[in-house]
Length: 159
Image (cartoon, rainbow, N blue to C red):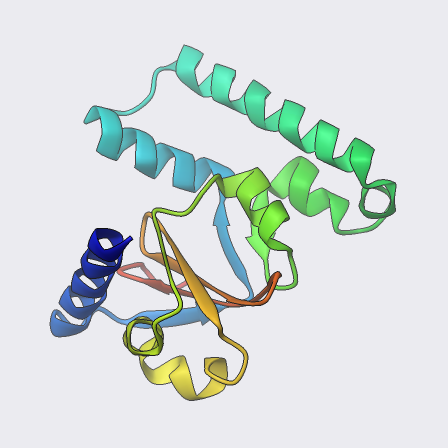
C-alpha cells in the first residue's frame, strides 16, 4: 500500500509540475477507455478484435447480472449508464464503479494527495472527498463513504 501511495503521490506531483490542466466532470471514463488504457500499458499494444469482443461480452455479462440483482436500477434511467454508455457518473456506488471499471490502480485517503490531484478544484471537492481512486488514463474519482461524489481528469483535451 505504501508503494502504491508513493507512486500515486509521485504521479500527482509530476502532473502538477508539468502544469497539466485538471478538469472537473460529473461523468468519468467509460469502461472501454479504462480497459484499453490498461491493456496498452500491460501488453504494449492495442487489443485485437477478438480480445475486444471477449472483453465486451464479459462486461455485458457482469452488467446483466448486476441489473438482475438490482431491479430498482434496471427500471430506472440510470440503467442506460450501465447498458449502453458504460460510463461512471457522480452518485454511483463503489460497487457500480468497480463493475464498470474494475479495481482502481491506486487508492488513497491522504488529503495532500487528493488536494494535489484536484488542483484548483480542491476547495469545492474537499468537503465531501474522503477517498480517491485513480484510473488510467488520468482519472481521479473521489468518494464520500460508498458514493462517488466528484471526478477530475488530467492530461486530456477539454471534455
